[in-house]
Image (tube, rainbow, N blue to C red; front, side):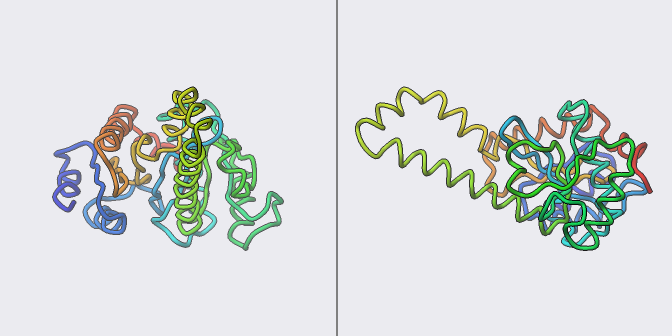
Length: 248
């Protein structure tokens, strides 16, 4: 990991991908490489499945506590990434909170809500409760790293739970086994959509060069998708776009 991050810093490579320790990657990235000028905190930004597509989640674990101005920068970076990489024309930005009212949440969230509301370049749709996140209410979910990691791991666990429930249901008796054969293609679509290995890893958004963290349990498909994601980031000059639009 250190060799790769040094090579990135020395401009011998254009992007770096690893399935290693998230903590080591975060520390190593900050040690060997620089953040984009003006970016206060870099954020782990995975692409997650939703009912009608996919969404970005940031931060998913790099910063356990964040100030309101940092959350605003996350929103700006997520907006740019969503437009350039996921090709969403007008990303809906939501702030993860315990209620949809602007008065809900701790002081930091209330401050962040008001700051996000004042950003004319963002399509801010307000607070979003966790139960609505997988239903496709937003294209970008902004939160601190503690909340984001909880959302990420809960959704991964829920996806596995749903897959196991379906498998048990289809194998319970002859009738359900016949149904499983008839619904095989549809079931494969569900399994594919819920499988994190198909989403190419999470970029450490805010660094000068693309740094992508693939899941520790990655297989060949995961690494392939992570490479394709890195290529998209380089071709679309994602770090340059963030540098041009970040609010300091």
